[in-house]
Structure formats: C-alpha cells, structure tokens
Image 1 (cartoon, helix red, strand yellow):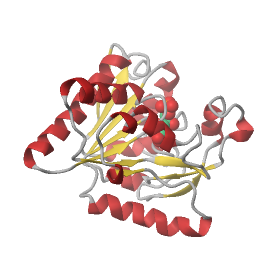
Image 2: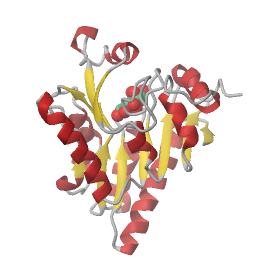
Image 3: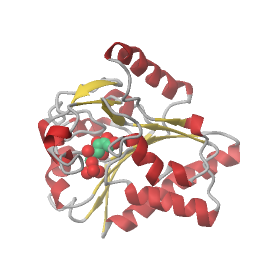
Image 4: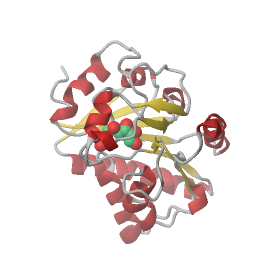
Length: 248
Ligand code: F6R
C-alpha cells in the first residue's frame, strides 16, 4: 500500500482523473475496453468533474469503457434523488459518451428472493468484462470500503448488507433525517474489490484522518475492512493533508 499526500483535494482529484484517462487512451490504442470500478459519495465528485472536462475539452471518449459501481442502497428506486443511479447520471454518465449498456450499478429494486442470484450475476459480469482494471474507492468512518461494514470478510462477494449505525448517521443529513436512511444496501464484497488490478482509495479532510491512520498503520482486521487493502499488491491511498494528518 502506497500513500500520496496532496496539498488539496482538487489537485489530487486531477491526478486520479489523469490516471483513469491514460488507461482509457492506452486501451483505445489497442482497440480494447477499459473496466472501471466506481464509487459515489462526496469524495470522487471532483474526479468525475475532471473526467467530464476532459471529455468536453480534450476529446476523451468513453466508448471503450465499462463501469461497475460499488453499491446502491436497498431498497432504492433508481429515480430517487437519493439513489446512486441518479448520482452517477448527474455527476458523470449524462455528460460523457459511454454506452448505456456498459454501465452497471447494483439494482436496489429487486425482491429479496431475487437478490442472491442477481449478486452472483453482478460478479459474473465483472469477470466476463475481464475484471476491474482500476477500482476507485472512498472510505467511511467505520472503515468501510464500498458498503463493506465492520465484520465483512476478506473473501466477501457482492451481497445485501446491513448498514452500520455510524454510516446511517453520516447519511442522515442527505436523507433529511435518520429515519429515512435505508438500513440496507447491495455492495460489491471486499473480495470483489481485492481482485481489481489497481485500487485507488481517496480521502479528504480531518474527519477521515483517524480511519486513514487505522487503515494504513493498524493491524489487518475485519473490524476495519479497509485494512485488508494492506494485502493488495497495487493499492494507492490518495490523501489531502488533513486526511493524512494522523499518519506517523
Ligand atoms: C460509495 C461508497 C462508500 C463511500 C464512503 C465515503 O459508493 O462505497 O464507501 O465511498 O462512505 O463517503 P463520502 O465520500 O461521502 O465521504
């Protein structure tokens, strides 16, 4: 695991966007697809802004890109303002030339009986696409990556999970009250994330400094799922100075 610390999140986000763009261009040159694992939340917003800018101003095309999002609340209507489907449309997909059939986001509208089979098919689709080239991650205060809350195992796969109380509290203002925050979500597993050829975790701000310190320097444990990334052969933590401030 390597850490890189930037003066501010804008510059850091531009570096991440450039890394994604160079993968896309390199694959274009070979006539091949690039497979991206994407995150939602506040952390990657500036990366998506920069990718949209590159599409508009530098002619970066996403026609050879396949995406898989980490997670979606359950239950969740994709048209809801709270859905990660809507988030991705608004921040990225509406503004670029990606083929809609190449976009994958967990479906929060299935019946509980359908979910097991659906999660297996989500894993299979990632495999069929050739596996994730780059997985982009944020991190929750619980140490979750995707919505793999404390207790998630190293080999966990895409599945329905129960959100930690801390995660629900962090989402409460977005949902205009804790009582409206979904209790569950569908998330790729730690094992799904660990199979990505490259993992880029980003974290901004003082509020993430404690969990970053634990994730980078703490012992590897299910109680802080991000610590599993210490085992990943090609994992980069991109931090601003505030998020890095507790590292020794
Ligand atoms: C989002 C996701 C979560 C977030 C994390 C941080 O798809 O999987 O793990 O990355 O909760 O959220 P923000 O970026 O809002 O601090």
